[in-house]
Length: 316
Image (cartoon, rainbow, N blue to C red; front, side):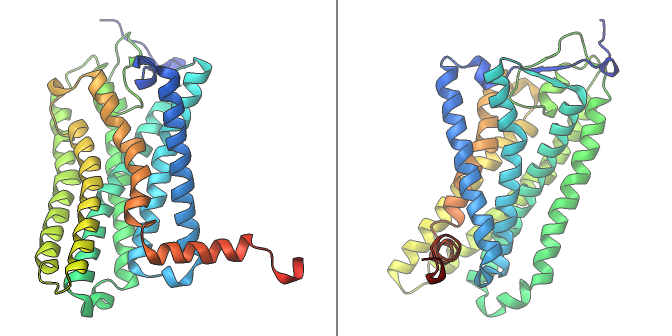
């Protein structure tokens, strides 16, 4: 089979969900609106947590990192997809594809780990409130953040370099929204079975292990909440935990489908739909579920907006 040489400047063609949709214009407008919501909600959250000193506590430090990751994750994928659709130009260079893959794997892996750390933070806050400031002191929080970024970036670098080293066939069409491992391996003209096993092992490490920490944390939280004397307090805690678990389940479920299930379970249409969940849907929901329904965050938002947007007496 004839190969094409990436060093000659040849790239790939991304045939994403917008190309396969029955109503591409409506879908494009919907994704554009969702992307604006991601920018607005996560941008406001980053601003508020950074500017309001009352939110400089461990929980909001982790939330700020989550908003940053969501903002970057979505911006790595969605703007290019929208511009390509509007210009009817779906190509991406070989280097651009490798860079996008590295950034997506880094941000996705870091968020996987960070969500587990956030679940542990919530467990400590509810189950061990008296020891919270000891167990979750700032140094520990920063260690969690740095660990998430470093482990994810190292794993992403290894997978990116190994994926792009394969020879690719004449077909340049990636039937996917973005450059990811599974769609690229389908274009490889070499045996990728051993590498797919490596991807599976990494997927278990970065997805199922953190997910088990999250599930264990919320089970312990549930047992603690059931003993809360106030019925209203129990209901509020249960609603909050269930909504957070729903969003976590969407993110981990979609990522598990892409990186752990064997390639025989994948189809281009399914992969495109699944990729929308972790590139645009969960980044929209995360700030709403974790923060913007929080009274402390909303109070801080009013203070920040009032300070910088309302006129002072000297300007009247």
